[in-house]
Image 1 (cartoon, one colour):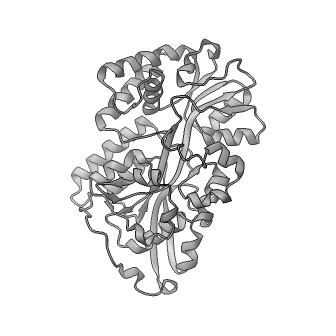
Image 2 (tube, helix red, strand yellow; image 1 turned 30 degrees about the vertical axis):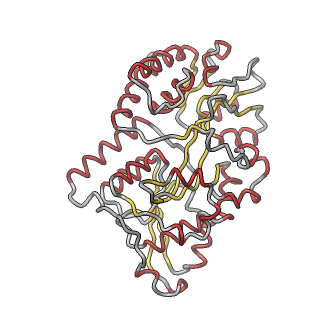
Image 3 (cartoon, helix red, strand yellow; image 1 turned 90 degrees about the horizontal axis):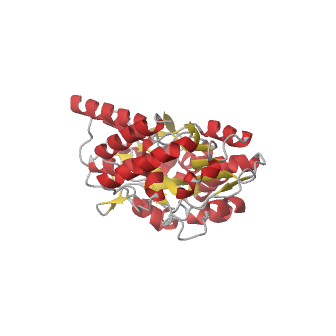
Amino acid sequence: MRITKKSSIALSLLIACALLLGACSPGATPPPATEVPTTAPATEAPPAKVTGSLTLLDWSGYELPEFWSDFAAKYPDVKVDFSFMSESADSYAKMKSGFAADLVHPCSNFWKIMVDENMLQPLDTSKLSNWKDINPALAKQGEFNGKQYWAPWDWGFESILVRKDLVTTVPTSWADLWNPEYKGHIALYDSGETAHIIGALALGFPDPWNTTPEQDEQIKQKLLELMPNVLTIWSSQTELDQLIASGDVWVAASAWNASYVGLLNQKVDVVYIDPKEGRGGYLCGFAIPATSKNYDLALAMIDAYLAQSSQAKLANDYGYGISNTAAIPLVNPDTVKLLSLEDQNIISRTVFYKYLTPEQRDSWTNTWSEVKTSK
C-alpha cells in the first residue's frame, strides 16, 4: 500500500540524478519504441509450460498474490520478482539508470515524460480481456500521440479531512482553510506541488498547472498568509492520523481517503470534504518499458491486475479508487459511496495531478521552502 505519493524536494533530486546518469551512460535511455511487438519468444509455448521471470517495479503492498492470481494460475512456472519504489520519481530514475523492469507503476505526473523520452512500449489493448470495462475517462489519461501507453489501475483523493466534533463551521471550499476559527489546528502536507495547487484553487485559478508568474506570486502570498494558522506540516499518513485522532489537528489539508477510512474505523468523528473547486486526485497505472523482452507476459500481468477480483480487493482493503467499472458490484457499498464510484462525473470533477516541467518543479519547491520556513 502506498505510504507516500509525492515529495517535491525528493522528486527534484531524483530527477536531477536520473538526468545526470542518463547523460553519462550511453545505454541508459531506451531506444524509441514505435511498434507493438506481435510475438514474444517467452510465450510461444502453451501458458502452463512457459518459464522465465517477470520483474515489476511497484509500490510496496501491491505485490500480494491476490492482485495477480489470474496470472499465477495461467503461468505457474513464471517467477515474478518485485522491486519497490517510494515515489513515482523512483521509477523514472531507476529506468534512466538502466534498471531492467517488465512493468512499472508510477502515477500520472510522470506518465508524459516517460512517453516523451521513448521509455515505454504502447499497449496492445486488444490482448487485455478486461480492457472493455476500464473507465474511459481514466483510460484517456494514459493515451499519448493516439496510442495507449498506460493502463490506469488505482486512484484516490486528496481533500480536506475535518474533525466534525471539534469545529463550529465545516469547510466547503479550499479557501476556507484561511478561516481564523481553525487557527493553530491546521495540518498541511509537505509538498510544494500540493501547496501550489491549494493556493491556486483557493484563489479561483481553475488550472493550477497553467498559472502566470503574477499568479504564482499571488499563490505564494496566499500561502504565507495561511502559515500562522498552521499547527504542523505532515509527511506521513500515520503521523497525520494520530494527530487527528488526538484532536490536535481539526482540519487536515490534502489528506488521503485512506486516512478517512482508517479514522472512521477507529470511530473518530471525521468528515471528508468535497470542496466546491473539486478534490485533488492522483492516478497511477502500469506500463511496459521499452527494454522489456517479455511483452506478452507483461500484458498478461496487466490484465490480471485489471481483473474484477483484483480491483475489488484494492477498493475493499485499501479504500482506493479503481478503473474497472465491472468490479464496482464487488466493492463494499460504503467504499462505493465514499469514492463516488457510481458517479460518472467524479473523474471530471477531480483535479488530478499533471506533469510538471523541471522549471515548474524547481519554482514550486523553492516557493514552498520559503513559505514553510516563514512560520
